[in-house]
Image (cartoon, rainbow, N blue to C red; front, side, top):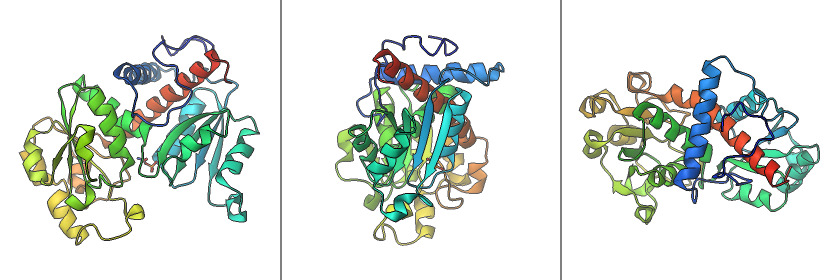
Length: 324
Ligand code: CP
């Protein structure tokens, strides 16, 4: 279906979910519906169609209980590009400080007519919990160490855009796998679409039994660099680490940071991704972050179209099932 179709048009038969809580359990066909819809939006935007009416009359709430630059801004912009009204909520300065609960906060915002909630929270499962208390559709914008599905989708979209397909590629996720919701969403999405995934980091930052998700484990970035098509450098999640997982930032960067020497040993067309925010000089050096192989800002651009796709598909699925 073209994204320029009317808001009341039926969604593709392969998408009928009212919420997007994670990429775990989504089929290759469902993932492809979202990626294709985002590609359609990107083409329309390039053709000058920057304002569409898919969410006319809809109010989207962006509820961020943790800091965000990219996700919050792009969800807000995505909703506006689809003609929705938006409500942006941040925990700081809210009545949470007076003792109001998470659920009461969300229910009060829903009572103002919000029918789609985008939620980021430090607790894994918080968006799922909301679906039990609200009528609104819920999109997970990152929950604890669980998932960050739209980040996984925009990473996959960016790889597909540069490589044409996901199946058959080898993708390395490097760094703090233990605390990374981005890693989990990438693993579910990439393996479902046929990529080989390698997780690479110090043993202390690789979760036990992660190979059960169908990934290979490596503790040597130097060993895997020559055989990867894509290297996604995950941030050290200092805010979630309750003890020292490596001796020093210097040693982490020495063994697991992407630098010019490692890029020279990589495939000529290697793609360098990072979900951001990046710590220059830790996960990657500035010359790599800003270099020819980096698609980091492409990821940010594509995040807008992925979020437009998710908002519109969920709205259409809910319209068809009468869940406005
Ligand atoms: N990648 C990402 O989620 O960035 P923000 O924390 O800025 O939203």
